Image (cartoon, rainbow, N blue to C red; front, side, top):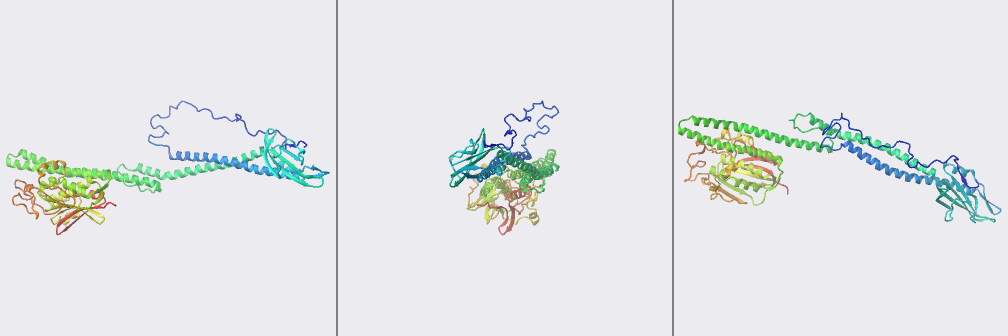
Length: 582
């Protein structure tokens, strides 16, 4: 004991840790490059492969994210646990050293002016708690002489009542505690310094234990997080699986909305699918309606034209042959106008979903209708007045669809209404109105009930019955270009604000009567009424065919409606649209 070096565990000191290359376990070898199994199917979508156009599954993404969180969190927790373990071990073993040094200090007595040390057993018991550490102690008097212990044990740089510092114990790092006891006796007056130290093996082992325990807790927590994350993903994806299964079970023609309940995030996808299927259903219904209209409207006119041509070919009477050929010509013209109307309806139905609505001035639509009505006005011999407000009437809409709907309303008025005819735009509160008015009493109540329906009609038009029972309408580009030169001197340029009249060469007078020097209103220049003398109908700004069904469709697509009414001035039909917000 005189050398001050103690070893509570006399056995060989264990290594503090494995050196490089001492791991007896087999390390991971290089990746195997075994030839591919010929039984595995080849091709763009092999078994277990990711189909084209898909990305990593959500479960895999969550697994990668959880693994990343656990790894990063584990590294942070491990570093924190090691730092905390070192700090906790230092605090614990520093107190042990201070306790042992204090016990030795209490055992010092002064005899004949010399300090004497009687090493207490309690000090060695405290130091023996660090079983694998080597221990050193040293007692120094006021003159700096070593009274007992290991003279190689380093002393602190300054003399203080308590000092804790690091040093060396041979070739190992060590930790020391120095305690000073001061004496003031007749034979000895001054300090006596007691130094106790040991190596750091127990401290390092305690720090490792703390870090390993924290890492074990982290691993258990990571496993629990992965399990709960997997369950949460499976639960969250179940509505998607249900939606996919519901779509897979459906008949190809079933486009009804999905009703399966879903969380808010997946409900957005469900609603988007429902909106897409609704648009697709509208397009399919539009195609079916177009085919139905064509089949309904075209079969009979074609048959009638064929029969009349056969009759004309077999009739030896030139007068009857000429009358039959004239009738075939009229029917073919009406047939062309009917095709234009069917194409207009198809275009309107297509643009309802394909074209985004924009802010526009409804007066522009009225001007377009007015500009494109010259052929129709010329053909019917009527007066057309345009009435527009001075201020813009702004709506959210599609100019082409609104123009087409207005042209159909105007065409029905020109063929079925009583002159004079007026076209205009107005705003009432939060609603915009594109209206057409004639001086007649309006259609019969039974016709009003079917307003907006396909093939509804109010008797014959001025031009006679259309083939297949459909009144003539005209909005084709060919019809507009034919004879436009002769209208240049008769048409009045439109203007915004106030009213403008357009009059054909055979226009009626303002009170609806025909000029004295002109053929009867609605008659051909030859003097015969159109349609072989068919009586004019003093009715409505509406007729048969598809005219008002197109206007009804456009109004519905724009969030509006059709409105009609009769007053002292005549019958008015209007397309009511919401005004665009400022």
